[in-house]
Structures are given as structure tokens and as C-alpha cells.
Length: 239
Image (tube, rainbow, N blue to C red; front, side):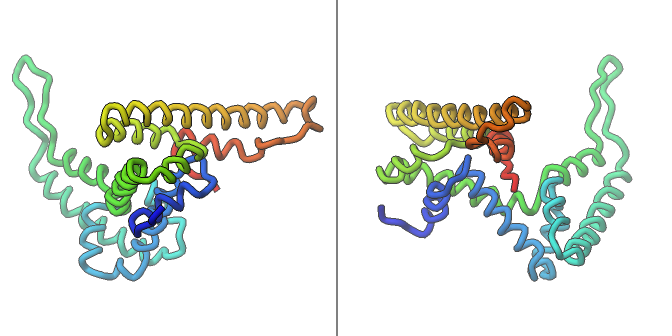
């Protein structure tokens, strides 16, 4: 299989032992984005302007806080709060949204609500990760159609988390022809459900091991069943 630069991350993820190769790819992209955010770039005016505008989602603000560069995060939060204060004061001066008519309870959304929603729906890290991850999805289907060896490798993986199973299911209908899509979805369903059952079986035995009657029985593959089950249902890789 001739490997090109843009296919390397996807191939490497499917060569691993993860419960979801796409979760591994997404985690690496997040790690890179976090490192970039707290690296020297936060002192550059262009980047600070973007972080001031976008802010961070709850997931990534926790990730940033857990890193060592507290000063860098404090500087970003300081100028981000300045931006929030400026925008919300301007919105508050406009007053509430217009009310509906006498017989209507409908109200227009206030400028304040719109500004807050704008901040809540954006994240600097998410916006660095999303377009690259979209390209990984495209690359998966490129390899699926062009490389029989990759198709064989993907068919032997440990399945996918629920969210990425859904993403593949949806994108397969867009990117593949009718016959090829039917074949892909049949295989995708088999891979997903067989591996979901496998992990849930391990989880059941993990639970059963807490029964004193099973104390002397082997753990088999159940010791890490809980974190693997979390990956399957929430797309989170728990270390």
C-alpha cells in the first residue's frame, strides 16, 4: 500500500489497539491543539485576538487548566474576560428583545442572550481540531475505496465508539455509491456490534468478579473493561 503524507495518521490509528481508532486520532489532534494554545503562540497578537473572540468550551478549559502553563492561561483568560465585558456591556445597553403582540407570548431574543450564546458555542481548540478531523474522515473513505489492504486492516479493528460509528454511517451514505455503501454499512454494523458486545461481555465479567464466589477465577480481559466501555459510549479515552 503506497503511503502518502495525508494518509499516515489514519493508517497508524488503525494499526493500533484502540477501541476506536478515530478517538485516538481525535485525542492526538486535541493534544496538539492544547500544546499550540499554551505554547509561545499565546503571546502573538493574532492568536490572542482569536482566543479572546472564541474562548474555550468546558472540556478544553479543563484540559488547559490541567497543563503546567498557568500564567499563559491566565493571560488568555484576562483578555478574554475583557472581550466578554466589552461585548456584554454594549449588548446590555441595547435593552431586552422586543416583546410579542398582545395575544402572543413570543419575545425577541435579547442582545445579551445572543452574545452569551455566541461565546458558549465557540472554542479555539475545537475550531483547530474539527477541520483536520474532517479530513481524516475523508481520508478514511479515500483509503477504503482505493486500498484493499487498508479495507482489510480496518475490517479487523476493535470497532468504534458510538459517535464515530454514527459519523461513519452517515458519511458512508454520502461518499459511497449505492452498492458500495450497502456493503460498507453491512461490514460497519458487524464490526461495531460485535466489538460492543465483546466489551460489554468483559464489563459483565468485571462486575461478576466482585462476587466473592468468583474471587479465585481469572480476570480474563476484564481488568480494563470499564475505561474501554467509557470509550465505546462517550468517545473519551480514559487513561
